[in-house]
Image (tube, each protein chain N blue to C red):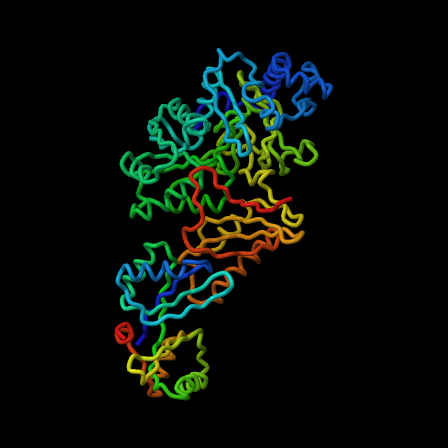
Length: 433
Length: 143
């Protein structure tokens, strides 16, 4: 189902004309209202009227997370606070969070994009949506909430946490869709099963899952555990929140970027060079309709690639491949680039292993070491030492074959690894460099 | 003639073994025989207990990965050559011992050897044919 047929199926030529017009407006606006942009454009020797085609976008300098921190909290807003109706902030792992603001129209745009995302997941006003994204400074909860209301669906504003209550509501209120992180949904499935609940018999039909990188294998596991269709949603608070891109239920192959509101590029994270469609690199977004907090060429650190082929669902928007990792959670182990999601794929290929793992990076002398802690489930447990050692060797070998890096596998007791209700922290880096 | 043995995965860290034995004590389960196989990182605790089903249930509830395996208990006179006579018979037909452990019966006259074979049924058949005393499960659980 397509929520906004007119825009979501615009012929490419018309779409690009619209993008250029909106881009020119936003570039001119930030140049004249935000000191940071004026200085950075001047330094790069580019003026707003230099943007004559979409191709000229690459002449503009990048914006990075540090720029947001430097202008903390409201320095990059282009409108006075009287016009701001809401702020959100992303959890800063180091120091201050990054703060984003919305005008009334921004909130309306965002609600429409989330409504489009729910429609792409096959939801209508007849659905009941269990929203387990956290409500608060995090954009997930309220973003999904407004979109679900815009669609006319019934929202259950659960937020995260209180697992037992979540399971009770899932049983008693009979939601047909759930929004949360994929690792939290797996956690709920496991917790429900332990409570003796038949999680497959719930009315749940669809999961709209995002806010962390996950793998195709994890999708299969979620779909099997709950008997639902699991779809990937993408967003980040700096750009808007959830609803920047969404996988459609018809295609299930890549997420449509809502290009009438965002321009997406893929760059080489090392050189900053723009890469052609199909190449893997870092996603860069420019917001072209946001009023309060426009961002020009914002580097997301998320690794993906773009697929320009027209999707069978009829949307003309380019698709981005499921984010395979972040350039900043990319581990460099003895010179090899390793993403936690790649390790997850290898583990999920081994029958009986649970999707709970932890990566410990350390350094012995001048050598990096990577230890993978994996829980021993009853399916893989054997009373013979050599069978378990065979399992360890198999994991080590598969990872070596697939990623080219030697790891140490440590089997740990079931349910001893940390479970995460928000974004899973898979990596513990003990290196002191 | 098979005996049910339970096995538990244990990480090599302080307190692992004591939490298993505490769980069994709290459930009033008695351990009849045990062995612990270990590597540098993990161990496998193998137990013969007086109530297999309850022990598995209790340990699962405590979050342990618990396996159940069929093993064979053979009673031999507690004197030199007792074990050798069994192994000799098995060697002749090429049956492999995966692991084994032994304990002495309360009377002190006999030893009981617990075997895990690669082919359990063939081993039992052979041992019975050769006149060895293979103990049934209920006998071992109640020793």
